[in-house]
Each structure stands twice: as structure tokens, then as C-alpha cells.
Amino acid sequence: MGLKIYINGNLVDKSEARISVFDHGLLYGDGVFEGIRSYNGLIFKLTEHLLRLYESAKSIGLSIPLSLPEMTRAIIRTLKANHLKDAYIRLIVTRGEGDLGLNPAKCSSPTIIIIADKIALYPKKYYTNGLELITAATRRNIPEALNPQIKSLNYLNNILAMLEANNAGVPEALMLNQNGYLVEGSGVNIFVVKKKQLLTPPSFVGALKGITRDTIIELGKKEKLEVREEIMTRHDLFNSDECFLTGTAAEIIPVIKVDGRTIGNGKPGKVAARLLKKFRQLTRTEGVRY
Ligand code: PMP
Image (cartoon, rainbow, N blue to C red; front, side, top):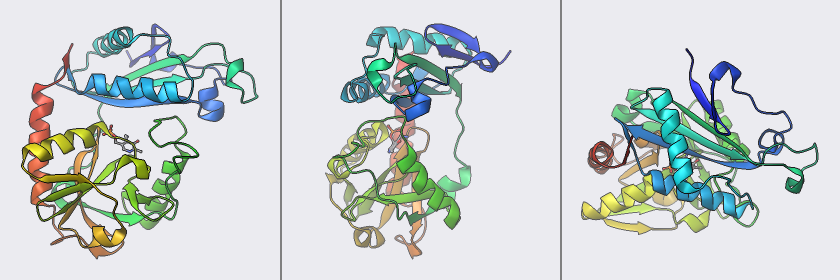
């Protein structure tokens, strides 16, 4: 038996999980999504992820036909149907089926998809050795055009950055905004450590407000670091003591080189290691049980 996928209230086999070619999620990237993780039967930061999904949907004028508790039940149902204790949950809400025009008013009702699968972990060497970044020439979407706070199905901006990373032979790319300030990676937030300061770009420069980012900010404060949202340039990054990336799948990954410049002593930093330990403790104890 294959994976069971939730589509509009039904759990169907992966081989039969289909949506219409007229779905505007496919035709126009018109929809929103979330990537959530469960650890040993606990869904980490579920409320935070659901709130971000509903806020993204609100912002694009998409009314999700399930209430928050209904959505929670649908997620748990999908996890249980697949007997998953440690899972990556992809929650997708599209505008639904319409015609070939882009008008969302022509779409009948949203499509809700929940995919729960085993988590595809990043290679262990990224955590032990750290990774190298290049700065993408592709700038992050400007908030006045498509606000990066909206976790939409339209990820071409980020994909173009990943393409540049692939071409450069590195695993991830740093994205700047239209003014040249640090924003984030293609699907991860960025932190910089300088002395006792833990710094991350403010979301208004054009970064997604990552749930992991928020958790690290809280953990950093508990660790008595001076945590601040700060506008930074590549110069600040090149001259930092440490740099690391955060995200639901990645958790915390140290960065040791950016555009050929060694960060700190060129080894994964102590602050990143300490925060990763604390973060993993939290994922073992906190969450919605199912
Ligand atoms: N930035 C972008 C563009 C993302 O897509 C993501 C999530 N994949 C993140 C940052 C990290 O967010 P989170 O910690 O909520 O996974």
C-alpha cells in the first residue's frame, strides 16, 4: 500500500491522488502552502504554521473552507492513516478549478491537499562541516509586488536563486533585496552571530517570518544572547563570527563560506551548535500530540 494523500476530505492512494489541470494552483501558482514537521508523534508549532497559512490565504483573498480545528483534525487523520511518527507535512490550499483565464472569481472552490511523508533530511555533512553559499543575482521579490510574508505556491523567485546555487555547485543561495540587504536563502532564514549578538534580517526587508526563525529568536534570548533584527549587508556577513540557516526541514545548518569568503574560523560555530541542541530538545517535548 502506498502513501495516503488527503484531497478535499478523502484519503486516496498516492497513485490516484490527482487534481484538475484547470486548478489555478497549477495554472498560476494561485494558492498557499505550509511545511510542518512532527517529531515522535508531536506536531511542532502546529498553531503557528496554521495561523501563517490562514494569514497567507487571507492576504490573497482565499477563503479556506475548513476551520482551524477541522484542519488540525484533517492533518492528524492523514498522519494516522500513514502510521507516521516522524513526518514532514505539506499542507496546500489552491484557488481550485477555474477556466484558462486568471480570474480567481471563476474558480469554484479551493482544493485542499495534505501530504504526510517521511522527512527527507539534509545530508549529515552539512551539520558537521557547514555549507557554502553564493549570493544569487536574483533579488528577493519586493514586498510591494508580492509580499514574501505570503507563503504562496508561486516560488519561482526562490527557484531562480536555487538554480544559481546549482550552477555554482553549492547547496544554497543567499538572496538580497532590491537595496542589496541580506534577506534569506531560497527556503531558509539566515542568522549572523557577532560577539554576543544574534542578528537576523527584519521581515520588512522581504523575508518570510519563519517559524524556526521565531523559535531561534526565543531560544537565543534564553541563552542570554543579544538578539536583534538588523538590516545587514554582505560586508556584515563576511565579517561575522558565525552564520547559520534555519527552516522546518533544515532546523539549523551552519554556513562556513559565502562568495569565497570564510566565515569566522571556517568551522561550524559554537552558537549554532548550542542553539541546535536546545532546538532539538524543544522538538522532543513540545507539540500537538496525535
Ligand atoms: N524562507 C522561505 C522563503 C521559506 O520558504 C521557508 C520555509 N520553507 C523559510 C524561510 C523557513 O521557514 P520555517 O522556519 O517556517 O520553515
